[in-house]
Length: 117
Image (tube, rainbow, N blue to C red):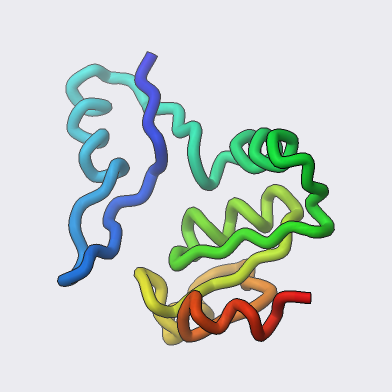
């Protein structure tokens, strides 16, 4: 079995973007002839297990992330509120390319207190 943490192709670092798990596992998939099962975002199982562990209901939970294709879709598929921060991978101009949308869009994580209830 081939198991990956997440299907992210790239991820932000201090000085730009670097390859992430999705990009690094792809050559292994090709050589092995199998598809990886990703246990992290956007797998809803991860969200359910996390909420169970911290004894939190989805109605009182938000998923905060910088990627529409993993972070925000994880919230949508798990029926958890979503916050997209524009300080990472997905930019504001790219939002309309997705069939789903975040509940909130913030410039950065420092603005999270503006929506916390």
